[in-house]
Length: 374
Image (cartoon, rainbow, N blue to C red; front, side):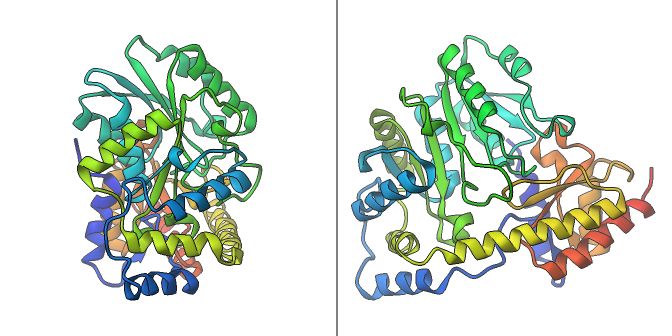
């Protein structure tokens, strides 16, 4: 298992003050005040002890309401397990399902942390390509050809990191049909479920209720709560019980303080979410214009907060390019190689950065591509 290619760049950037940070998917907004204040009150009110491993019942009841209103399906609190971030929920779900020797279908390009998980589970990752010429949507025939008797899980991610693609309803339904036909677990990473610019977000749990779907969400992106470390997995009660055993064995449950803050996030005004999404949409348009002017635009993202840039004109692979860019031009981006083979020749730019950083950083990147031609 290798380190995340995103973290490799960000760890260098941290030690270089003044670097324009376009690498990490972390909102540059502060956590909204009503959420932070709730966290402070939780400490003063003594919420500093263990909770139920699955999370506070009051929080899970609020999540039931959120899933009904935003994601359009019904569950009970017993079908929800809170974890240390969305990554903790995804890892616990895979650990609950996979046996040594099993296979999991992962997107390429896809979030690097996905590919870091199968090795410590003794499982094997098999990658299905998402190509720019197909709007980063899966080729269903190619995907299905990768299924073997050892395939256990099909992982999907929409809105997607790193491409910003949003899978249309028909594609989600077709992916669900593949999972049903081959009796696969369908793990849906929907950590960007409320960050949408065009189209609609559709999760498989909204129409497939046979117990095979497990969905993961997070407070990190929607409410700018990355450092609070709180996500949650939703699925059939028996599977969630197994997920809870995994969580019990490695974290004993997420921070009580973060859970109380999350209650305030769900109860409080939601205008903050709309304002942040509007800012991301504006930055998307700004970045798209800058990349198009430079001839580096790959595709226009419809959700999440990332855009891919074509740096294939520069010498070396995208990892070498990203390392050189941060060290010589003071701009940090995530190399496409961190996300898989399809990402070679590209870098990911985070729209969670400020307008000013995008206006300064993207032209520097474009200039570097011109200066470092193959």
